[in-house]
Amino acid sequence: MDEKSITKKERNAYLFIAGIFMSLAGLFIGFGIGFLTDNVPGGVFLGLGLGFIAFSMAIFLKK
Image (cartoon, rainbow, N blue to C red; front, side):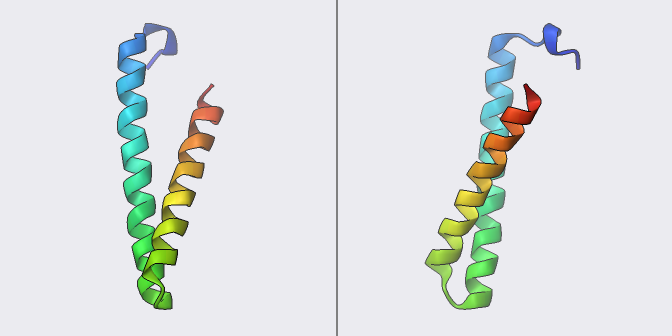
């Protein structure tokens, strides 16, 4: 898609969906790491943190 043809509303919807996807992906990766290391809360927080970092980097690199 051409970036200029995307409206602000469409861009916000895209970022919202991408944020949810990154956070959920990070959450499930964190659950997996937590179950493997027998430390589920630590894995969940690690996964969420990595998901948010990946989302922030995706926004930064998109600009």
